[in-house]
Length: 139
Image 1 (spheres, rainbow, N blue to C red):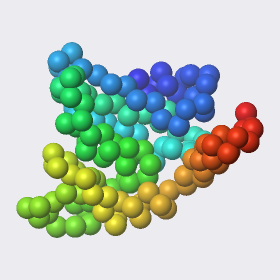
Image 2: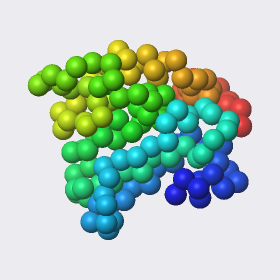
Image 3: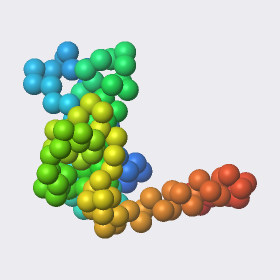
């Protein structure tokens, strides 16, 4: 999937491409896999997330894992267990083994994401704000 995305002529038109896979259709279903630090990068492989759906009727049961993979794409290269000790009430999203009730972005994950160049997303935000005010957007 990643090599196919890299070969696309319009690779720069989307920031991230996601492939959703039904877990019953693959031999070794990983919950998720993502290219790290790829948003707003000019070089490198295509910016992708591959996400295996275990319950095709309730995707929300895996929202924490999907958030974890987006964390990698946005710049959180290291897992939280490289910064913190595990506790029984661990709720951080970027732990290497994501708990079902994980929903907190740790200070370490936030710092990694904020230090990553996300300037290309600022242009998108400006375009959205212009659309809300009725101004024309640039192409």
